[in-house]
Each structure stands twice: as C-alpha cells, then as structure tokens.
Amino acid sequence: MELVSKLQKREADGNPISVGIVGCGQMGSGLAHTINNIKGMRVSVIADIEPEKGIKTLVEMGHERGSIVTVDSKDQAEDAIRKGKPVVTSNALMMTELDGLEANVEVTGVLDIGAEVAYYSILNNKPVIMMNVETDITVGYYLNQLARKMGSLYTVASGDEPGVCKMLYEQAVLMGFEVVTLGKGKNNTINFDATVDSCREEALLKNMNPKMLASFQDGTKTMVEMAAVSNSTGFSPDITGMYGPKVELDDLVNVFIPEEAGGIFSGKGKVDFSTGKIAPGVFAIVYSEDERIRKEMKFITNSDGPYYLHFRPYHLCDLETPQSIAEAVLLNEVTVTAESIHSEVVCKAKRDLNPGDIIGGIGGNDWYGTIMTYTEASEKGALPIGIGVNARVLKGIKKGDIITLDHVNPYDKSFVYKLWQMQNSLLDMERR
Image (cartoon, rainbow, N blue to C red; front, side, top):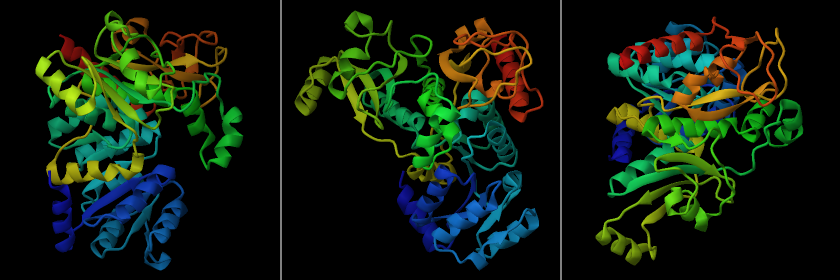
C-alpha cells in the first residue's frame, strides 16, 4: 500500500492530510497526540462540547494557546485552516462542511452525534472514520450504503476489535484458510448488574467516565464490538449473548470450534469472546483440510491442525486509527463496514421497569446490551440498544427480560431513530 511513502510525500509537499476530530475525551485526545507524531498528517480541527478539552490537548501537543482559534463559524474556521492554525469548536456539524478538512473522525460514543456527523460528512463527500461503534451497529449499514451511493466513504476505524478481527479474517482468507471463529479477549467476567454507582470509584481512579466503565463491565461493549465483526463478515453468535467461556491461549483452538470437532459451536462462522488471560488480544480460529497446507503449518508452527489459531496479542485503539485515516484519504479504502445486518445488540433489563419510566443509555442503570442474530431479534421485536435511549416504558418489564418494541415507545425525535427507520425501509426493499 505504501502508505508511509505517500504520507512522506504529503509532508514534503507541505500538504499533510487535514483531519478533524469530533470528541476530545480519552480516545479523541489520544488520537490527536498520535496524529501529532505522524509526518504527513495533522489535526486541523477538534470539536467538543467543552472546547477547553480541545485547547488543552492542542497545548499539550506543542501549540501556543494564543495560536489556537476557537470559533463556531465556518468561514472563520476555513480561514484559520488555510493559515495553518489549529481550530477548536463546539459545533461538530460545521466540520462536515469544511473544505479544509479531508476526513472527520467521530470519537464521541454518543449515538445521535455520531449519526449526524457521519450522515452530513457523507453528504458533503468527506470521508468519515468511526470510532463510535455504537452508532455503527445501529445505523452503519444504511450509512455505508449511502456513502457508496454518494461516492463518499464510511468506515469503522482500525485499532478497535472489529478492525483487527477483520484484518485477521482477510489475512486468513488470503492464505487459503477457512475462517471458523472470530473472537476477542475480555479482561473480566461480565457483571450484568454493573451501574454508574457501582463503577464510580474505580472509574475515577482510572480517569474514566463511570458510564463507560459500566458498559465494559456489563458486557455491552463486547456485544457491540462483536456485532460489528458479525455485520462485516457474515459471522454470527451461536447463542444469544455468546458463550464467553474462560479459555486460555493454548486451548482456544480446542474450544472455539464446532461441536463435531470437540468444541462448543453448532457450526462454523461464529463470533464469541473469552475471559481467559488473552485481553487485549483478538483471535481467529481457521481451518484447512489441504494436506500440503497442513504439512506447511506443521513445519512452520508445529501445529497439527486441521484447526489453527491466528492470534494478535493487542489492539491499540486510537493509536491505530491513523491507518484508517490514511487508507481512506490516500487509497479510498475502508477498514470495516457493515456489508449486511447479521447481528443486533438489544436491550435486556437490569432492573424492573415500570410504565412511564424513561430508560437511560449505554452503561446506565436500566439495561445492558446482549447480542443475538438479526433474524431472532426481528422475530422477537427486540429493542436495539441504539433506539433504547430515552424510550418511554409502556408495559412493565421484569429484570432479565429482553425489552421489545411492544414494551416501549422509542424516542422518535432523535436523529439516529430517523436513520434507523430509513435503514429498515432499505432492508424491506432489499427483501422484496
């Protein structure tokens, strides 16, 4: 791909890739610092509802505070970019229209903001790279189809589990293997009862948002990540919520395989996770019955097969995202996109919910996300997590029950809800 040489040329020509970052929390700030160390790429604009976060990050990167332009006006932002001055804004949607930006990276984790930034970036033919996987599993299929129709580009970023799993998948296929399982390591067992209050003390010690930590502990983030893998590869969970057994590295190849071969799955083509000590690694279990390939694998890896482990012991989140930016801008290539909808992450009640309750969002006290096949979710009328935010409860729901669209009245004023409706219409047309 020669990405580095292309970036070096952009640097030599005084024309580095101009990047906008939407959201300057832990990941957004980390991404800005990463880009700051890459020749041929620069952070031109940072958007955050708290502009001081963007200013602080830029100062840490070596910019003089007096050189940073804080504006919400498109014309003023364009002028600052032309002069090479970094911009901070509270107006994320303005960034979708800026000619001086070559790509936007969405890092907020907020469903509605992610949906709007992606949608309007696509309409303005600006590549958009999503670190907001929650938005992607909700309306990513529609956004991907819209981008293709518009001649634009929409992709989930490299670095998170979906991007790295997709990389392992493509590498294995290009080596002649059949991919059987794609999985990740989770560094703790799921606590379905995790709430903001139960996570607050640990979150503060780790400099994290308590809701974010709760979404890790209650399993929602793992479900989201593996749903994105599913929708990009056609793989699916074997059961609702996946198995998530505690399996260590050397035994993955014996467990994450079909039952007929001694494993846990009903067949091939599955996504799942392990709580063994393999996090932050991701893995693929691959298969070959070709005797010549098996002989080669025995010689190279001392593995007998026919199932083999391909393991990457890390995923580096925001540190790897610049590769997706470079591929999008320089090569017009995507990293991970939803080619169809094979899996859905739906709401399961954390507590008894009563008529009139307004249910909260990801990492809150009301529900956690669980993965199931899209077919099963559709048959049950299960409520996708992206549509669950701010829904009003119509019927009583018991703790542990799947929340359905019959139970609630979704908040239909949100932008992500409107895109979700358009996605459903698109899927209906494709089925006819």
